[in-house]
Image (cartoon, rainbow, N blue to C red; front, side, top):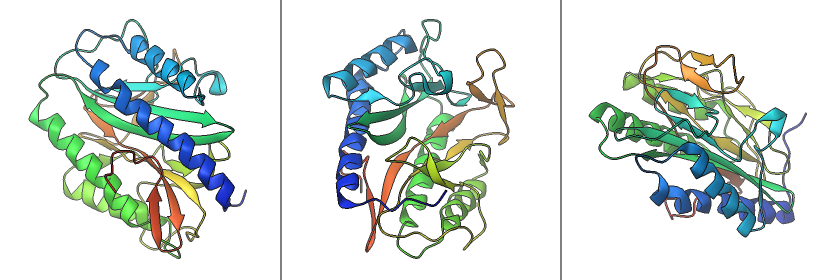
Length: 255
């Protein structure tokens, strides 16, 4: 499957969907606190989507049962919201949402903290956000996709962290998952070449300990660190423009 070049109408639709996804994370922030269960947060997110004319792309995707992925502490990604998962002081939590609005997809995630967190957790979150920013800075016409992963992995490993290699970023917009695969570890100047109109996610998952993933055999989704150490992730949907990039899921003016 070739990498899709989106036209202006598609870009406008993907931008709108991306902004609702990102705004839902702003909306949910005050509710992420000790004593709250993750199913409650998921229900609030689903309601927010509905109020803004969107639906969740994750709900019923390959049997996934919820409207968001909520992944605390040693859960790398695809944590299934539940009444049993109750947040407590010191937790770090990734919330990952993908919206469908008028047939267009927007995908983003960010880290949230509950009460006072450890220095180890704080340093990991800061480094992971920096990894995402380094990856985004590589987005421009005629650059290779591999340079995204090269920049991310070089920084993370220099800081003593490992980079999850079993999950990656991906094309998005007209479908939930499209080409290309956007690896977060890659050789310099490897991979396909970026062209204006390409839209994809960059979503590094960075671990304190080993990079390996263990997927829960019971639910088939929840991916945890093999050594139970902390993991963090940030994700944006990014457009290649004629002279660089636009972060379609940036609603806070970070870029």
